[in-house]
Length: 69
Image (cartoon, rainbow, N blue to C red):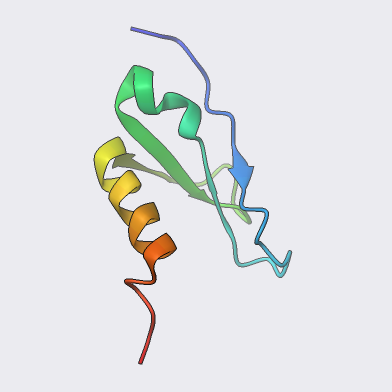
C-alpha cells in the first residue's frame, strides 16, 4: 500500500468566494478513493468518495445531469 499524501486542489472554475471544496485525485489509483474536504476548514473532516462514484459524479456534471429546472 502506498503512503502517498493527498495533493489537494480547488477547481479552476472556483470563484474564490469561499464556498469551495478541494479534492485529491492523486489517491484514486493507489487507494481507490478521492478525498474531498471543505476548502475553508482544511483541518476538518475529509470525505473519502469511492473513485468510481467520483468519476460518475464528474461525468454527470460535465453532461449537465444535475442542472436545476
